[in-house]
Amino acid sequence: METSKKKGLHLNLFHRIFLYLVVFVLCIFLQLAISAYQENSIMDPMQRSAGNVQTISLVLNAFGQTRELLSSYRWDFGDIAALVSGLRRESQIVEDNLGKIDSDISSIGVDQYLLVSAVHTTYSAYNHYLMLLEDLLIRNHVAKASELYYADLEPSINHLYRYMQQLMEQSILDNQSTYDRLMTLNDRLDVIYSLTVLVMLLFGVVTFREVIRMLSIVQEMANASKAITAGDFDRPEFSEHRKDELGDMTRAFNEMKMAMRNQVSLLQANNEMEKEIYRKDTEALAMQTLLEREKLQLLRSQVNPHFLFNTINVIKYTAQEEHAKKTDALLSSLARLFRYALADNEVLVPLSREIQIVDEYYSLYKARFAEKISLFWNISPSLVLTETLVPSFFLQPLVENSFKHGLGPKEGQGSVWLSLGVKEDLLIVQVEDDGIGMDTEQLHILRTRLLDHPVTGEHIGLYTVAARLKLIDERCRFEVFSDREKGTEIRIEMPLILKNEEELDD
Image 1 (cartoon, rainbow, N blue to C red):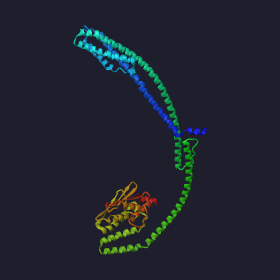
Image 2: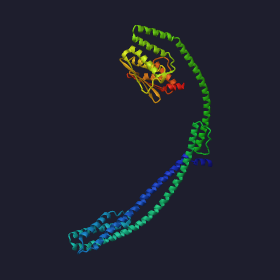
Image 3: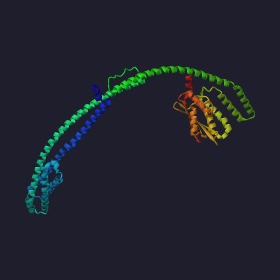
Image 4: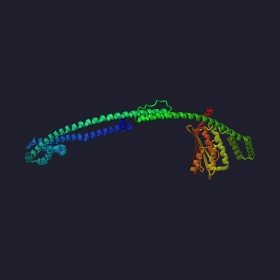
């Protein structure tokens, strides 16, 4: 029974940290509330009381100065202008500050309120007599002014001065009482504020300790995860002595590491087995490739190249005897193109030879279609044609594809632009035409088939070039772009191979 009660009272890590943070935040809000209460209920009343005493002092001093001016004035030969100026100056001070004296009975008490009321009542009569006095003095009725002062004004100002003195004394007494009461309350609030600071520090330290412990365990797990990623499964197991979520997490991590270790061992065994199978498959594929080459060589040997070349030469000599220069030139181009096509197309050749073969092919095509087709070259000056190596029979299938599928079905004239350039360590080849182009569906089918190895069908030349580029280097890229009625562009990127580099590789 006791064990179950302990488990019921036990808080997990999340609840403990949440509780600590709630207490911490509550302490902060309590401190803010105490500070606001001290500001509104202690400091502000004290400042208002002190300001009220200062205002009463200013008014009392102004009444004293007025009484001094009048009592010391010589009515038979005194300076009237100076007296009037002094009276107006002190009267302005009274006017500016008398209305600022606190008259709220709830804040100043009954005694002060009665004195303030008496001051305001007496001041009305005093101000009336003072204005009459100033008027008489300005009109030089000194005798009447003297009678007014001794009969009416002097008693009024004496009453005002006495009321103000009593108000000052009562205000100081009340202010001292209020100050003592508020300071006592402020001291109590300071004690509560200090207690909240201690509680906040205590729970803050506890929360910080729990977070640091949690982060240290997480950091250790992160380092262990990096080691596991690197293949190191020999690190010691984490301690599982904690009974909270961190303990559960460490136990789960240890079990996961053990399972991964077993899984990696199994994968390594499978990998070794797959490597052996792959080696045998590679050997079988090499044998198959060798057999295919043997078959291709056998097919080539069935046609006697010497017979074909001799036949072309016989026709060529006949054309010369008949003075058919155009036919002679076409036969020469055909012979060179045919000889180049029967050569070994697995080797790398200078780019200049590929350009020459394209020119030979273009001359044959030009003889048939005349001005309907045009071929334009754009070769970068930084490209050394005789030193740059490319696969043999590499450019001609691209140009043939543009002539056949792009310009052939087009009505009217068409052009092909063949650009050769260098970008960093890559050879950039672009073959662009303004033929009929392809729609989105046809372009998608062509791009999909370029990923396979078709042996028949349209665009077989493109498939052959793309397949051979894959065998040269993984960095080779073969891309086709086309728009209906706008034309087609073929872009090839392949590593720049120079003759010296090729010899070094050999």
